[in-house]
Image (cartoon, rainbow, N blue to C red; front, side):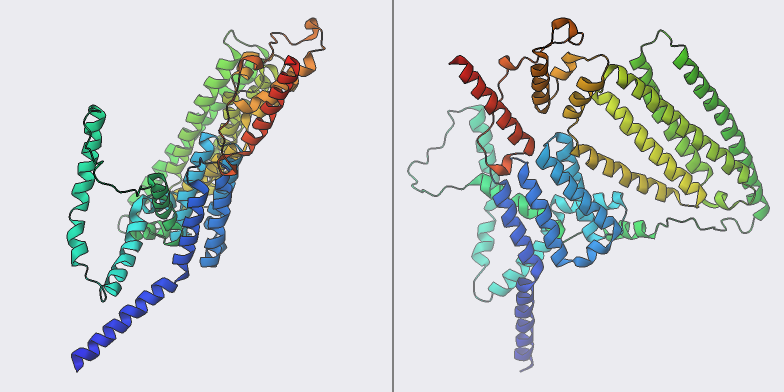
Length: 507
């Protein structure tokens, strides 16, 4: 009687677990987004379909876990994920696709723990996307299904049949390799009449959608490193690290303080002399090329500022921030930060002066971005010293800034920006460089050529050459909206108009 009672209880819990699992909204939301992914990406390229999938994922996440959107880091990750999707649907540049992929991984990590740092979120998201989340959650799903339906079916035959699956797949792979090595090596299976054909692209699209989208609705992460990450404070806390040798500890702080004062004093004198020389060179240019000066100064400046931040992190770590007589060290560090800001502004001035003369290029745009990130980093370094923040706070805050810059940068079509600025404001136009830009630069170049057709040759810009549109034809794939970007649609309309004008001219 007791055995029958226990058996009934176990079957009751088994059926209850199965019903709860099937009725859980996470499985239905996950199935819905996988179906949408399959429709959007099957036999398609990454383009406008991304702008449909990303809002759908965020909408279903809000329906499943609305509390996530109350977390600061999760909101940032969600905004970056949506913004990068706009960039992919707009331009489809490689860095836009990369930023969207990285944003997706960070958002997966934030679904597991929305308060973790960007490094741990990316790490957890990467691991969960590599089958871990899918295998863990749906291994449990398969086990419950097996236990439930095992009451009605005999799975022993399926277990024996499974023994042949892996050997058959491996043998088929080697057969494919031997067939590639010798095309005459073909196994004749014409006697086996079977009309069913597996749609492998569709199968792998569904499989990848299931794997990639699982971490959003069934998040996974390494609990131990996530817990240690959450335990790291952003504000410094004074600790008594040497209670038994207090005099020696004070002496160590005093010597380190004096060393820091001497070092930052010397560095301030050195960077001041460097700035004075740079200002003098503006009025007394050397024989060295201006472009070479700007680019070499940029990379040297980046290295010097990174080293400066490392020195500040070293001297203002831990209890050194609570040393009551370190005001002189703080003053010199603030002066050092200010001088580095002036150095960055001076580099921006030289770059802008060069851009006004010779126009924009991707390298010169990179100098602007680098200096902007430098100024933001120096601002947070000042904040770290002033308000006693930890080194970890400075590192992961700047990581969020760099990630945001990557996403924002992917929104801009720099090809059109370069053409727009150079044709209107540059004193010397490098037409060969402009003609070598991406396809999105073609319409404004052709429009510029049209405005110069009625201009006398002696009034045209020096070195002007019309864009060789007659020798170029762009071929567009016959795909629907899922594989098209906004740029591709505009370019298609542009080239169709040009072909129409060419046919009219031939008549």
